[in-house]
Length: 88
Image 1 (spheres, rainbow, N blue to C red):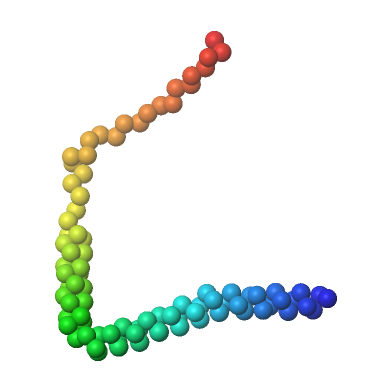
Image 2: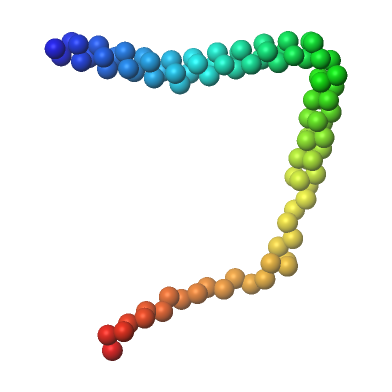
């Protein structure tokens, strides 16, 4: 009986490992193949995708160079908690 339970636990752990690591890898591989096939059949889409990526890179670079202006934020106010005792 103990051997059966240990076997089920081992099968469960192997299943979890396969689901966690192998399935995402297989899905990524499959999607990469489908993407290549799509761009081979639609060359105009590859150009549009490259254009979109370059625009996104330019946007990210401009966001990195821009620093927030902290002078206009105001001053920090520390609030104290007031006990509201009605038992007076």
